[in-house]
Image (tube, rainbow, N blue to C red; front, side, top):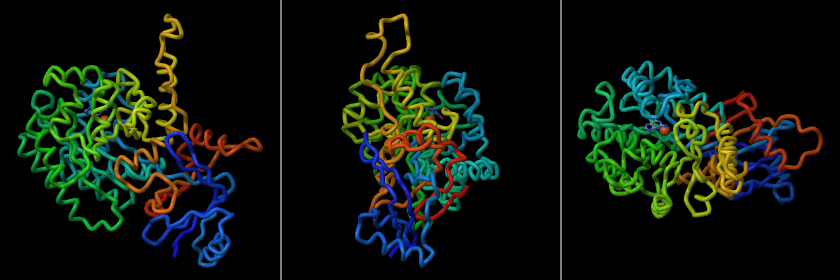
Length: 444
Ligand code: GUN
Ligand code: FE
């Protein structure tokens, strides 16, 4: 028996390249927040279910021009950096971290500051159609628990990481785990505190979070690998994200980032590594072998990445890829804007950018992706990374959904046209409602 039925036109990823269009469907949601079936007008039960839902006041009928989409999965985002989103993007990565980011994150030793920022941030993610986020917190257990609490109170599905950064060479005195033991104890305490919270709808999950290779000592990386195995938890970090960062790892270890992460047990099927713009083909193979997902952060990469992630090649190779906003390496929490940038960056990778070179030598042929592929990354691809039955509108998946208003259609448009314009033109004000686990958590 359903507790909510949503009637209208819907789009959901069919695979990495195709979008399925569900015309005038009934999305039937059970009391536990799962989609138990999706009915089309030709289905035998359609009119009976529609009538019953109407009678029991359990029906939401989408208005003219509204569409139902899966909620987005933001696979890589730094919650404490929300106050500086859109700032300091002219600085290179190491500078940006030391001058702006570390001083801001250090302020989360103050839980009342954390509460103010995290309450606003979680609400903002929901307002942008994001229903699941894999987030970095800070090194402060108490502030990270505030973020967990905001996820639960507001209904965002949150994967929350206690950040580890204990390498005195690469972190400032005022913002560092002061020993390996302190770092690992804090991570374990955070895990146990989160796991002790009653959570019937699986809204929050703790995540093992080495900030990135430069920030961590060898002993901390090894300890986090052991913790991830002990508690069978997801892992998040950054991998080969810029020229400076990849060279740092080569100089310290004589290996690439991916190989170092592998050495310490940090490449697993539940690991998500952000950026990867400097990965070699061998690194990509290694990530694939471990079924580790790459979080593509196309806006952030423009500023810090020194290159474009070859998404099309990775998908063809069989690597797992999702999409991230990387607040505040990226300036917007909107995955719509990141979908657009993913497509645009892929076009520039294909064509190349230096017009002094002959056209056929300028770019990397066949690198372009479509809006449908970028939408897959933002929905089904992200959910797959988290082993989460979400990111699609189908029976057996969580009812994590968004209702969006299309812009003017100028008469007759095909479903494919409507979908493409939704990807390119949806702004925050067009997101009319957001459901997580079948519960309306945002309305506009
Ligand atoms: N590498 C290490 N820390 C960070 C961070 O906060 N943001 C980004 N984009 N890259 C990082
Ligand atoms: Fe990041």
